[in-house]
Amino acid sequence: MVWTWRLEREDGTQVEQPGGREEFPGQGDAESWIGESWKQLLADGADRAVLLDDDREIYTMSLHAE
Image 1 (spheres, rainbow, N blue to C red):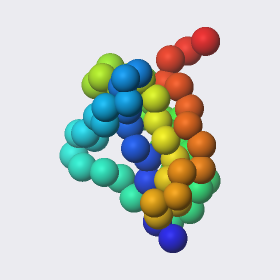
Image 2: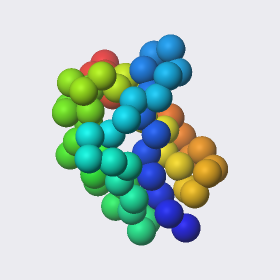
Image 3: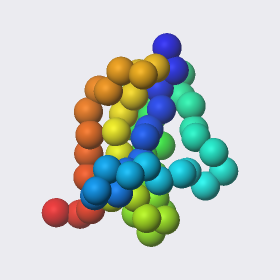
Image 4: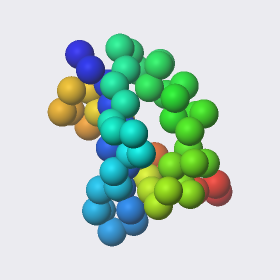
C-alpha cells in the first residue's frame, strides 16, 4: 500500500505538488505531512486534499481554515 494526497482546486482540477507527489508508508505518516504542509499547499493554489490508499479514496478535506 502506498498512501498519497491528491490536491485539487474548488472546481476539481488537480494541482501539481511542487517537487512531485509525496508517497507515504502509512496513513499516519500522510496525515502528519498534510498537517505540516497544508498552509503552503493552500498558498500554492490547492483548496482541498484527497487522501488515497493506492488508488482508493479514503477521505477529502478542505485546506481552508473554518
